[in-house]
Image (cartoon, rainbow, N blue to C red; front, side, top):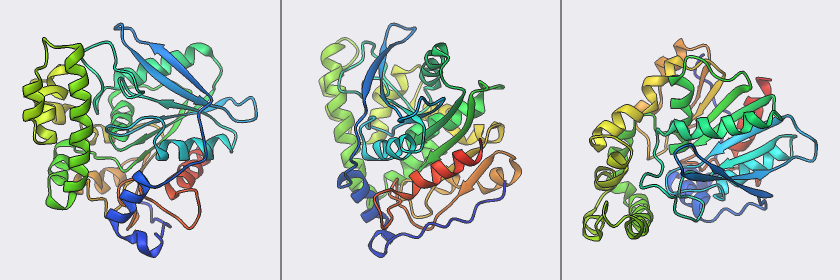
Length: 320
């Protein structure tokens, strides 16, 4: 598909990427709560939690949303998406990745940017209820990478899946790690590192034979955390192998359902690899929209709903 010309214009203050990113992540309030939490028992003996909300109609349509690194289904960007879709006749399922719902998971492994097997189990669980005939998938940042990898790595998808939207998605994990390591992003990396190390200290208490406190304390970068834990806990020889095998960029040409990739030009987490114009131009299914502003998941408007929410609803509804 041709690269889409974006209609998004940020309010003046929020043309600054850092202001948009920080405001959306820390100051935004969304008047919405999920209605039910469901624990899904996984085939490997672990679990993850699903947060549900429902439209006022007996809907046959469902969106499944996936959060970003160190996030959860209660992040404002997740709730904002849940609110607009449930108000427009869709049910909502917010997928908390393993260990992200407030309780450490049972296994030493947790989640990563390429763990599509967990999404597959969530889908199988939902299909078993035989309630929804139209399903759309939405992913943010790390969850966007997981989503796009899922769509592109399989020869066929379940017929119920009609469309997908990925927001602020790093398509090359290694390159985006390099971008995060730039001095301008130090505030974000410090926050990510603190959250991830806190989680690792909790995991060390549960798995003292696999992790030592000194190893965690010695981690002074996201790369070090991925070398120590993320890669090896999930079967990769190194962080480099994890980034290489899990980056969604290589899977984009194989996507076979209508998919919107919404990445802001001024997103400081992203590099040129996350704006795959040539792939989109050759694809019949991948729609690439690159607003000039928006930062990282910070597409703020002069109203409560953010642009990514209105755009996701519009794009998905147009595919049905």
